[in-house]
Length: 283
Image 1: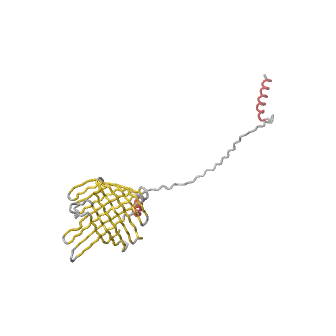
Image 2: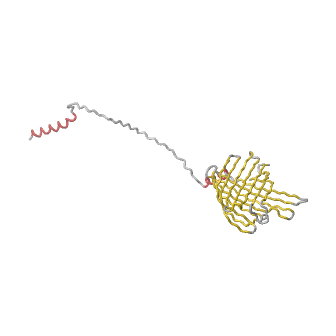
Image 3: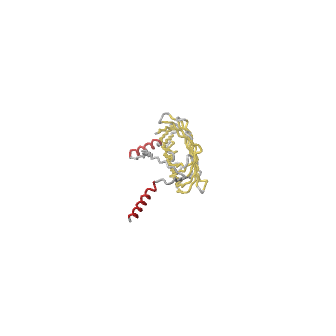
């Protein structure tokens, strides 16, 4: 038993020592070696994105800025012509115009009245108003909605109301010169010669304006509005005028206003025209 224990102990010692003892030379060939280089570099950039904070103050400033960049431009005009002697005539006109243009929308509004008499007989007595909104789809092409009203007692027109949509295009759109063409339709309601009428209309219009620097302005516009199913029942309005500045806020204004109604009231003429001169205040 003692001999067996001794042999077992010797074998255990040899087994433990054998792995470290260089009994032979082992050659290993390693291919496809992948070298991994790890660089523990951590870069932290404290970039804080600027997030606009909208407060009541900034929102109000934005509204004020928009209103300043695209303000309403308004004017009031008045003209008076008197003759006394062999003929006593009076012609008095007033007009209010306002307009605003933004990159996408254009607004315009006008009110006017004219009164004239010769002796004790009225020769002119009319009131008119219009409102138009243009929405630009491109720099030149736009859609519009227009409403207009007219009352002309001398022409025996108690009222004429028209409203309708359409489309337009700027043939010329430069800093000092614009030329636009418009086409559309609408509905007209009127009382002419004591007869109430209501019908659909078509509309063709053209507007031109040229500014000579900032001292003078030339404008011209024409509008053709026929009844849709009776084209011989139409009204044509034409206006051409010039405006010359005499100061920053005041200017002299002269224009021709002509209205042609192909089917006027009984015993009334088809054409009404007047030349008006007056002074305009801009604000």
